[in-house]
Image (cartoon, rainbow, N blue to C red):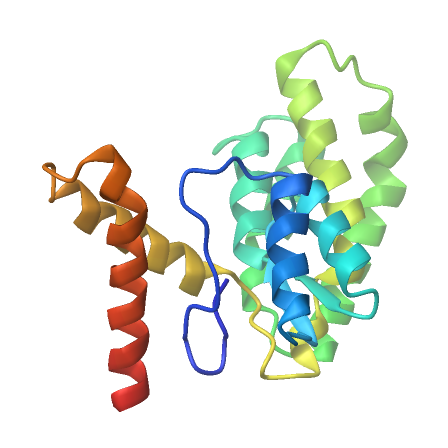
Length: 205
C-alpha cells in the first residue's frame, strides 16, 4: 500500500497470495497501530474490497479506472464486430478522460443508453461462446464498478488509478531480477531494505 499524498510505502507483503485472509491480516495490523484511511484506490478484487470494508466500514473504495479500462477493452477485443461490443468499447475508452461531474454525467448517460439498447440482448447471449461470454463480463464489470468510480472528482487526494503502486512494485521486481544471486531466504529482506531506502529518500527530499 502507498500513501497517495506522500508516495511513501506504508505496508507490503512478499510471496503471499492475494486474497481475503491475507488482506484481513494486513489491514488488521494497520488498524491495530492506528491507521484509519479515509479512502483507498484498488482494482476490482472482490475479496480485497470485502476485507477493506469489514476492517474500515466507512472507508471510500475508489475503483482504479485504468484497471477498468484495461480489463473491459481486453474482454471486448481490439476490433469487435458486434455493434453492442463496439459501442461498449468506446464507452470504456472514455473512462480515463473524465475530470468533472459534467463529464461523469455524460459517461453515465452513455452507458445507461447502451444498457437500454443492448442490455437484454447481451444478457441473453450464450455465455458458453467465448466472445459472447467476454462481452457479458465487460457489461457486468461496468455495472458493478460504476457506483465506486468517481469519488476522485470530489477529492484531489483520492487517486483515480493505482498506477503509482503498480509502477513502484514493477520497478522493484525488475531491480530484483537484476540481482540473480539473492538467496530465497533473503528475498523478503531485499524488498524490506529497498522500500526502506526509498521511503527515507522521499522523506529527506
